Amino acid sequence: MKYFIITGTSRGIGESIAEQLMAPDHHLFCISREKNMRLLQQSSSITYLAFDLNQVDQIEALMEQIFQSIDKSHAEGIYLINNASMIAPVAFIDTAEAMEITRNIQVNLLAPILLSASFIKHTKHGAMDKRIVNISSASARNHLPGMSLYSAAKAGLDVFSQCVGLEQNSAQAPVGIVSIWPGMIDTELQREARTQDKAVFPSADVFDSVKESGMLTTPEDTARQIITFLFKKDFEHGEVVDIYDYSKLTEQR
Image 1 (tube, rainbow, N blue to C red):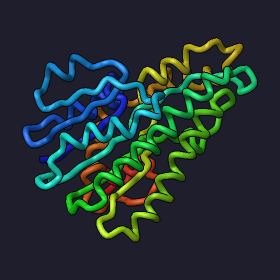
Image 2 (image 1 turned 180 degrees about the vertical axis):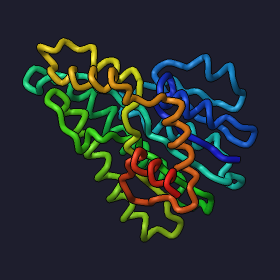
Image 3 (image 1 turned 90 degrees about the horizontal axis):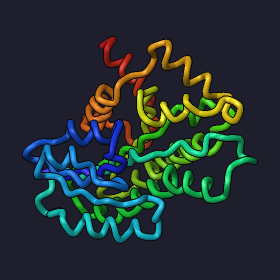
Image 4 (image 1 turned 60 degrees about the horizontal axis):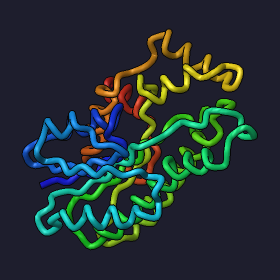
């Protein structure tokens, strides 16, 4: 049996990843603020946990609950996909409220760090395949006014993945970890960005033009690429991977 812990499965990439991972020998632990009933109706091999990742002080208890349901002695692989993300507030930092700033950093950076730390603690002695995929963003490199929090959090997630990769190199039963830039996808985050008041968030024009030029991929296509990468034999442990560049390289082979 392979076990998958996936955050942000209420919609978008997370929902598509969960759908495509459904299989008789797979068990999914799906995490989002509200249960995705459409997913639950498709499979009996889903444990759904309605959980707000802003409750960072409860994440360890959440992971304890999950791992109590995993038979590690018969697990072929255990995987964590940190997908949940939020873009708000999309505004100049001096106009953002303290609570908005806190929520953004907690969901985009602190929650995946805590989930990863707990995952490694719970699997460190297991001989099964163990991998963490952090869904990051090219916003870590491509900076726009009004997106300082999102970009800073994603850059932090990339550095975290690289540093943990170095730590795991000395582990007896290492956990593989990567940070993935999934490209530009037609998700709720994109829609939220391009519909902002341009007087407050001038970068909304950039997201508008990306949509109009047909540069956005679908969540389904992106999920397929991420899953393919997750199961790669030569998993790029400790790396930050641009899935768009990786896809082009694969097509050329």
